[in-house]
Length: 445
Length: 147
Image: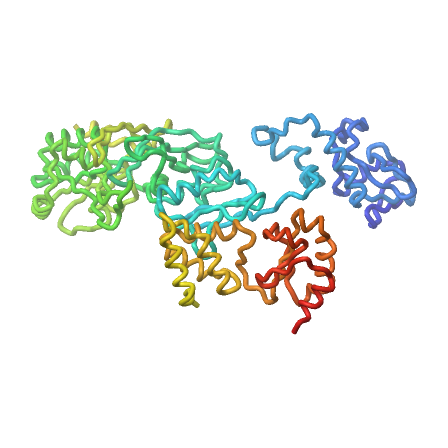
């Protein structure tokens, strides 16, 4: 026996339930109450179809097929009926989809996407504005989500004084924008994403990556330069992926960075996710190496006071000359947050009395057989023929003796910034794959 | 392409500059001057004004988009502005608007605007900035077909 569904003939058994025929033939028929193993109940009215020769729409779960039945599941008029039924279902619904567990596999959501009322009941049409506009500097704008609070335009006008953002038009046409050909372009631009109280400004780097309620936060300090801006590290570990850091946010500190970060610092979280491939630590070999006569150590000036102290103690025990050299980049600093010294704790190095003399280091280095590198960038990318280099590193590094150590996201510690402010930072709640530097040094005692 | 004010307008700009305590106050007068000179406000003109006033380009652009009487695109037709505010409305501007749109919208760009301060001569319109008052369809025909 044949029936016609949306102008296509379909083979079926006489007397079968129409909704079963549709479902068995993979024809989309929205329904809530009907279930193939529970049978029909007919209460939700969602499976309405048009049947030729019948004045009113019929529910497919209470219609039996007969020869020559002509059914329409997708006409404009039947879709209008479905839309009305959905509107009724939603009258008392809390519409809390963002926090609902069923979101993404919810029939009400699915059907509303298909047949929903997208035009509001306003008597005038909604003003359409532009969406996903690339403003430059990793910032995306959705003008329709904007509430015109002008935080972002005030940031570029009053704080960076670069003036890229403004409000154009007026009335309900008013919207945040850049002037054509004048993109957002300043080293602090991504602060506007954090300043935006709604979803109008989002970060190209973070958007669509994570739902924020799945993130944990740790109070930390940016290690990008000697300013010591206060940050929040947002991270998580999901069922199928190991721990990952997803972003840095500014943590308000009126003495240092207020609520702001530079883009360089903000994006420096990425290197904390880099995996270090290192041979398993062989402590015995290392202990043998340490028997050598001429040894020198170079410690990164971005290590915490606590780490530097244990390095100092370790070097004293093994009679190793210890140095630390700052990371100076004359092109980095500016008159606000960024400083030319890109080391996070050089003031701490000086406070501990570690030698920072480049000439002394050079001459000691020349004579040394064994060089211990405590995470200093200077020695990581170089190969020295007549020397044995031992790296304790928190970033990827090549060499014969590489000991991976936990990075600052997995450490608690103290830093002293360029202005002498002593600040504590805290690690995430997960343990790093690599051991902490102090644990390693403890083993070597 | 670059923009510069004519000699006459440069003198005007200098005299305006003395009038205000802050350079910023010249944003509107200079935009007007640029529109008067070129018939519209080009990007180059806004760039020139922003450099002259030492303000971000976005500030000038924001002001220029806020006021509907600033034109940011070059039009290819002469502009007729018809008043749609109360006095003109009461004196029959509805009929004038309809007549203009039906008969002249091919040759002219017809824009409805708010009161231009000539209520004593309502209904009124302008052609390229020149006021025409107490207009009727007959007067419009006469004026618009003059050449």
